[in-house]
Every structure is written in structure tokens, then in C-alpha cells.
Length: 455
Image (cartoon, rainbow, N blue to C red):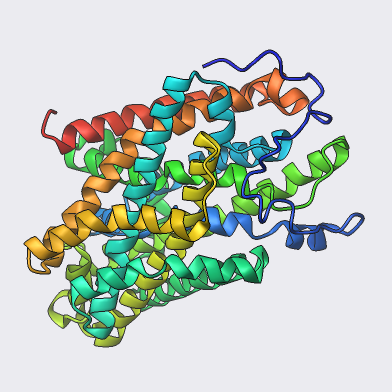
């Protein structure tokens, strides 16, 4: 993949594509011109919340809790390393959108042949469907756990959330950011409360953040580590980040404004991803504090829900209230992920193939395609949650396959001086990004081969 040499060297005066990314919200949020640090940061705070949601969606939960249940606090170091890589990649996506005025999907389309562009579009669309499957499964199971709604009915209800983003978009993008931030806050508070009750070892937690060579020598521990890494960084977040970084009004003819936008968008992204890091740490700590040494089966959401109210497993703190809090957090995660999945789907469809259709139609098509396999499993297995959750595992495997198709173009574009001008990746960033990419791709390939029993 090469960056077109026809791109102007002066990044500040290049023509932004006539078709703006997420045109209805592009540049819709005004930022203060000469305000202080904190007021400016508040104006730029928001897109990072939507990005962070992808790093704490239902697809991550089982792996993180199982990691704590099996190996206590040892894999906290894996959560930490994954989060640092995520911060690097997401900072690059924000910079790409701010500097070029285009998202990753648009740039990938422009700098590839027609055939390659179609292939990458199909992979990206399938990745959106895979992400959607995790959201559907998480939300529908949460509805059953909370309200005893039959699983098939819950799946159908999640189809109707096509209307959710349509309503929210009319309220303005800042309202969407606030709603997602509220849902994220619910997740954080629920797991912070449950971990506090679990009374984990603070010394054990601190020691767990120090990488151990045991991870490389213990086959089971290595495999679960790969699962944590593979489930953390999602392809759709890279497309999303390059687009919603453009929601703040910006004059690209002024270098100072571009530099300021990059600075504060990066700070926002890092703060929110740090919150995602806390959530994933809490999940693993909860698994370690409550389930380590109990030999409990925690392979599914229902298992976790039941275990939290079982005194024989988690001791005196067990209660139906803890189980219900878990289900509330699961529903919050599924619904917040739904919003970001919708936006990502629109970015990919419009960016790759320039197909503009009403948002409700685009969302309905994507959601119906995602619901179909889940609904088929639910009918075939008569609402058996455990069997349906196997689809979630398969969706995470496919997301691992799709990841290089988004990461590699991102590193190439942000490292190009022709495209990025003086904002191209510095040498240490570029080499760190390539090293992270190689590690991610290698680990994901290993995990895929392990999943299919090849290794």
C-alpha cells in the first residue's frame, strides 16, 4: 500500500474531501479559542469515551474474569501492556483524522486499487457484524437475567435499537457522548463496588502488573493472555477514532489549531482508555478475588451471574443484588457498544464505497445481518445461553483476523510525510507502532490457530 505522491506537502491547506466523514456531526462541536487548559480539555472530552467503550465491551468480560479465576493477579501485566498499545494506536487514529480531514476508511479507499478496496471493505463490514454479535448476545442475555425475558424475545428487542441512535443524533453529538459516558460510569461503579466487597490483595494486585516470564512458559496462561490481547483492540475502533476526532470545529489552515486539536484529542483518548484499563483490571481482579481456587465454571455470562449469588463459591458477600448489578453492567456495556457500532458501520460504508443511505436503513441492514446467526442459534438450541455464547467466541476470533487490515494502513498513513506533513509519526512512534503491530498480528494468528486446534 502506497501513499499517493500527489498529496500536497503542505498539510494545512490541502482540500478536505467533499464527502466529510460523518457529515451530520463533522465539525459540529465548537471549541474555545483562547481558553485555559481545563476548559479546552473539557471541550475536547467526549470522543475518547466512545472509543473506550470498544475496549470494555462484552467480548472482553469472560476472558478477563477467567484470567483472574485461573491465574489470580498474574495477567494484570497483560491488561496493562494491551492498554498501552491501545493508547498508541488510538492517538494515531485521532491524529490521522484531524490532520487529513478524512477517516481511515476514506484514506484506505483512496490509496488502494478497486479490487483491494472492495476486499478491505468486506473485511471491515464483517468486523462490524462480529462486533454487533457480541453486543446482541450481551444485551439479550442481560435482559433475560434482569427481567426474565425469553432469549429469543431479547434478541428481537435488540434489533429495535436501530431507532436509538436516530433519536440521539437529533439531540447533538455532545448528548451522545454524555449518554455513553453515563453508561460507562455505571460499569465502572458496579465493578468497583463488587471488587471492594471482594477485598482483594493490594500487594498481589501491584505485583500482578509486573510482567512475569511464567506467562511465556505456561501454555494455558499464554493462551489466555493472547485472548486478553486479541479481545482488547477492535478494528472498528480505529475507523471510529479517525472520524469522531473530526467532530470538533477546526481551521486546518492554521498549524497552531491543528497541533492543539491533536494534543487535546490525545489527552482525551488516553484518559478514557485509562478508564477502560481500570475496568478490565477490575474484571480480572474480581475473578481473582472471588473465584481463584474455587474450580468454578466461569465460561459464560450466566455462570458468572449465578456464581455471584452462590455463597459456596464467593462466600459471605454472595447475594442476588451482586448478580443483578453484574447484569446491569452487562446491559450498559451492550447498549453503549451498540451506539459506537452504529457510527462505525456508517463510517465504513460511506468511506469505502461512498454509499450514502438513510442511517436507519444502514443500521437496520447491518443489525439484521448480525441478528440472523444469533437468532438461528437461539432457535436451534432452544434458548440455551451457553451454546449461543459460543458465537461470541467465534466473533472475537474473526475480529482478530480483521485487525491487521485496519492497523497496517493506519501505521502506513500516519508515518507518511506526504500525507501528514510535520505531524507524521516520529521515529520512536513509528517503530513502536510497527513493533506493536507485528506483536498483535503474531499473537492473533497464534490465538486463531489455537482456537482451531492447529497448535
